[in-house]
Image (cartoon, rainbow, N blue to C red; front, side, top):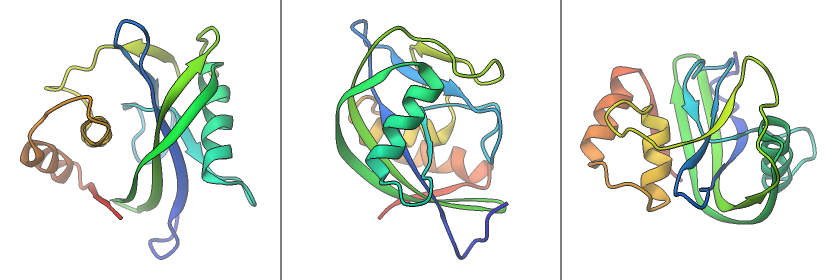
Length: 150
């Protein structure tokens, strides 16, 4: 658990394949355990958001980030968790492989009716879906999650 006064700093990437599917990783731990979310993770000491995103994407998926641009920055709060998350959009290359047996990675079509609200928020901000704002906020609130752009 991380103190609510000191956010965990993370970076994530939204990317799609040539069929329009989104790259997702099933979370093996943390506040969103078992949820399918975008690849990425926490910054190591002295690491930039960009470097963390590239390292985490490679570790989780085996893919190299070719290009990336910043889309949004968020303050994310859940029970016993506070994070600052930077969302990048970009392209990747290589062969997809899961970095850990308990954390599979795959290209997927996102079902907006069942997707995790954190995934919906990031995909909406990236311009990939048009799920109504009130639906995303209501589903997040049901899970005790608050996510706002900063």
